[in-house]
Length: 264
Image (cartoon, rainbow, N blue to C red; front, side):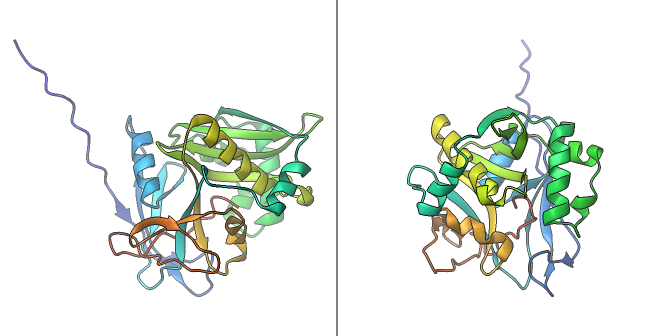
């Protein structure tokens, strides 16, 4: 009787990018370590690397390995101990009339129109502001690893926000969000993260992964609203104290990742 050996898992190949201008800190250069999400192990690889501080964009999972900078710090919300402060409770009240629903990640023209308006207003000088419907569909569809898109609608059924989300073994990763920027008093970006916290609790998951936080970066400041917040440093994940900058050296001694602009 012949015995068929079990299929071996292929080795994950990693690559290093060339130097590029840092999108967050003027005058600095970033380099990224990255790999592609392919095949039946994509979700498992995405979960493992997310816990190690990587982020997904399309079918690429990356982390900067900048030789002279370690300003970027991976952060996540421990949902079991999270309690919204007064300002976040106001966000929940302001959006109490909205409904949210989770769908398999599939791009629609309605989503694209809202995404385009968001990009023009918030990131008008970026490449993303010039994305076509095909580009948007590629962002939503490529590299899906147990990925869903959560839509938020107002009382009339109009789409006002969306957040692309990966389900990990221990939590949810906020890949990219977009929303109606004319409704600035609603703080829709924060509201969508609060909905991820709610979903984590419903599914018994421990964390919402927010990507990277950079001290002093205006684009990253909203992430510090969510407390407690954990940061990945030299000794693994630990609580980020108010007014404290964590040691952002990764466990293997290399600089921690830099933000790629995934979550606004």
